[in-house]
Length: 356
Length: 259
Image 1 (tube, each protein chain N blue to C red):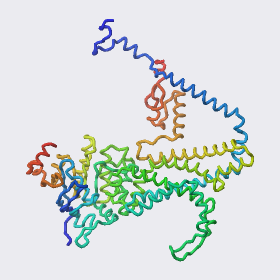
Image 2: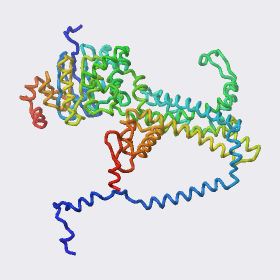
Image 3: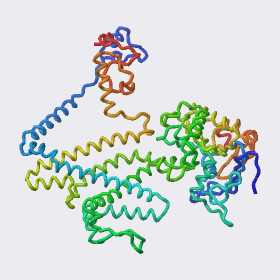
């Protein structure tokens, strides 16, 4: 092995024959043997799980199927949805107000908001729920009127704050403490230049927040908020301590009677899965909405992806050009090999055949 | 009491002092800009030129001294022998008479170019959309971006963004325009298009104060060039005097470095 056979002078081009030969070779992607082994392992594990789900009779799938759409279960699901919605509205409405208070220049508003958040984050939710439910014990009647003066109208606390009232008060007020911090973090995250530009233009302060700052803050607020609402959705199950007819309490009542504990817990789990899925889809579209301005082009929706995928696939099958309705960037990013088929750049069968 | 001027937009800065903590950034600045004149402020970085501009529309409070536009105090009102800071609402109203163009554009990224321009006239001045929108489109056309009305800032180049920002600053029909290093954040090949727009405005008779490092621009357009260093105005005068025959050593040293 002499050095001269190993070192080719740098400036010398490849000989013409070798060049032609290399040019004709087929180009293949890299092999990933590790990936195949990992896929096989995961597939086996998955098959084991599925088979045990099917073959183990204790899961009681027939019971699950029977109870999944049972009227009292459905009304429990509705109870859970109602609680989640009401608590989310109270939580994020009050939370936004608290966040703006904490960011205001008034020391009084700042301290009140801080105090609220401190108290409601410190006391366990289940304890708050029981306290609200027992409000009638503390204050048998509530009245509207002049502070420390005469009242105009009096209510029985028990009538006003029933199970549902106590539940949404407990869930909503404690949620507000967490939401406040999420909203505040979002507002702080908006570039200082945005506040300055709005101020320099003379835009009124309320409008600055609503039109300029909050929409931009939403981009960071939305993902964490959906997380919180999913937490809230499942958190509603704590309300069983008030014997309010939400999903978890309803399931408990039924298995208390028929003793089919596992199948009924599965029913509840499936419903929580479905509701969380709906929220996750909502999150995608919300995030996409608030990404306007932050991204040059919005990510495609699953529907768009499906439609474009089908169009591209169909076009490939027929070896026809890809329709112009498919964005160029998307089509090229998702092509597997060969030419990007688009109208105008006429690809041909001969090209591909020649390479094969 | 009332100073009769042919045109509006007289800017007066008198004895302005401003400190951040122990650092004094403006130590007694006096500056008068006559209506319709273009004043270019130059100086080393950290000399206080941006702060001076931000004091003029009260984005910064002062420690002493005052700013007046057409004889009205900006940001303060006289109470006996004190100057009391105005309520935010009143300051915001005053700012609609002063256009401000930022170095980093600060367009609202979630709004289209047109929405950026119409926002302040509608929400700050309470003018009807039907009147504001055609005017905003005309402004976008004036800065050469009529076809970009529906684009969002991220879809525009830096030069285009700054031109939209200029259109936005003009939308409230200000008497005074302040430019804080309007081309410093731009790629060199985009500087020209923004300067062209500013030159066009300079001829329209609006009072302009421009902080910039573009000495060529100062030479071509300025009625007055102001050299500021260490929080003081070192010298001021017509460009031919300040740029070509500076009287002070510090001005000479600075110009030697940038030219």
